Image 1 (cartoon, rainbow, N blue to C red):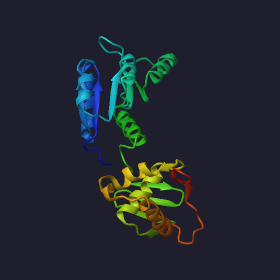
Image 2 (cartoon, rainbow, N blue to C red):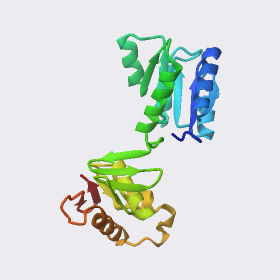
Image 3 (spheres, one colour):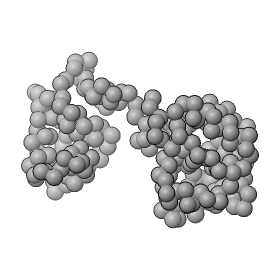
Image 4 (cartoon, rainbow, N blue to C red):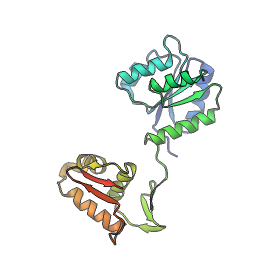
Length: 227
């Protein structure tokens, strides 16, 4: 699993715990910045773009859930894992309502925390699995290869990227602007209205040459949906 360039912020006032977490997360490849209070965190968030925050509930100056709630109100939607000795149902509910995504009660296993970090970042789309399966489609993300019912199907890089975008957003209508930005990106300068239609037709013929499976449905006035 590739964790390089994924930055995690930890706010934990107990320095021994902070050091322990920094050690375990750095060991598996994450970039980690630690704080013993919320002071300077807001400025850090303005200058950097961390992918996840680990926040202790019992912080000096401000309660951790209250701090996260303030960050949410300011528009920061960074995934958050709370660390806490508070394990009552009301405390857990308060943490989730304030914007928390996951919870670890003290004492906890550093290994379990790393697994929870991995899982939350996967759900957020920041860590990619080597292989993604959708129905009978199996995409090997690292090799950029597709197999259907154990049969390799040759796709161009663009076709693979197009299919991958649909698999990541399965059952959701994807409009043309979104597809253009996600798949063509900087190459969209010479983009024409029919470009997506042509690419979709080629992709459909490769993955369903008999036209029997109907992976995609057109959404009138919007774009397409993988069903």
